[in-house]
Length: 275
Image 1: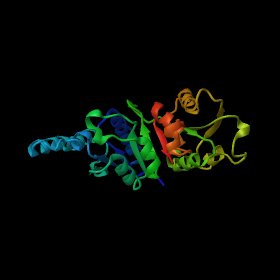
Image 2: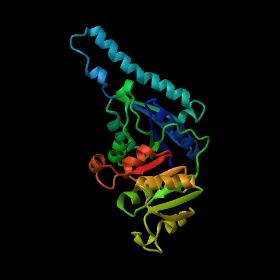
Image 3: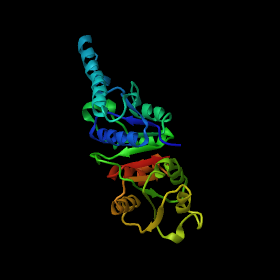
Image 4: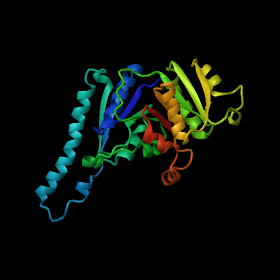
């Protein structure tokens, strides 16, 4: 099944603009519909309006906050104009917690694209947390790093593989993308003899049956697992990293740190996540 229905979570930040750039490239490549969504909860300002303020002042503050979403709709229209057909562009404005709204809507789309986490101090009601969305939505997401602006899609992908549940989920969720790639490199941190799946059934064989050329690399641990994977991506000049999200519980990763959180924070290339 080809990608035909892309959701782009847009809040106007630098990373969000990078995500829109990537989403437009994907929409053109796959001849897909592109739906922008802005979700906005209550801001710290509106939540903390003093009761002693006059009604007119309270209304003015609320209107200033609401006006941001109108401006984002215009900005989205300006940045997408002429890139894909108008009948394939759509816009959703939702007054709800951003993470919850994007997670809910993503379940209706082939893939959701959003930017790396950034703290929008002046517009905190628009802040998105890719880690929470990846964990909650039940669908694959694609996270664009800040400043990501290639002129064309880099068609080399890396699949991070440890043979566990979330890695398998991400691998097969990404298959419709992997089938379009010129090269796929599978990477496992550790020695080949510790591979959880014996030959001759391996990911290279599975990809070959999808007419995808691939190689499997076993690399030593260099620093952390996240650093090892990202270092490999940099070495092979990859344009996409596919990996499972939160093999351990998100709470344990939040408390103790983990591969998903570290890669999300450090990645310089688009990151395909599935949980």
